[in-house]
Length: 294
Image 1 (tube, helix red, strand yellow):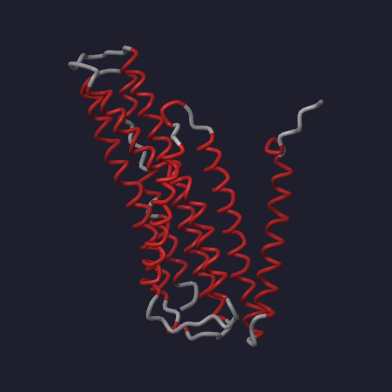
Image 2: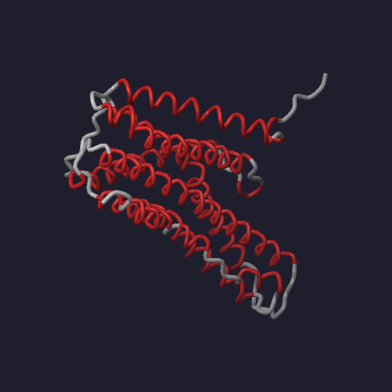
């Protein structure tokens, strides 16, 4: 019996599926908006702007979630975790989600803007939950990275006295592990930054649609909401990523001290600011987005 083809090997199938997804979600959102409001200028007109941006953002989240799950499934060796670990950390992630929702509520509280579509808040809550789920694999990978850094710190302490130019197996193994951690944290930081940026862009598109259709006054949906949203996501991403970056750097410098002059270990000293710059992406996105409409 012939093996079933792997659809992931066919980019055309992925493109077609993505196009169908976009059309279906956009159609549902547009129909919901057109049938749930008495403001036709917004519901059947400007609402399409937000629906289009929200649809693209949702597609990005789905793709990032699939990529994150794929990264976790591909983990091997010291990265593997028990069911107990997964249960505990998934519970912790759920608690973090509740706290983040409270923080978002505090950011947007006090405004008088109201979207003139029935049950629109339920749509926003659903999209927020989906975005949070999409971030899950990447945040869990960062937490695993913390544990790997501690493991490598113990291994580095056992290497012994410093020896210039040493290239022995333990040092090479630790160096490869450290490089692997750096690569994973960079990918996680970039994924989380994209998630935060698309969320900010979606909120900005909503403000643009509402104000342009005169469904709400510009002062009732302040551009500072968008800036606050971007700042919040940047802080959240930084709070997740920076502690691991600092711990990794301390461990890498400790290994460099143990094996000065080593070409293998020297690769750890290459500075790549991708992770640092990524956490600023949501805030950077919020600046132009907030002022699309005065």
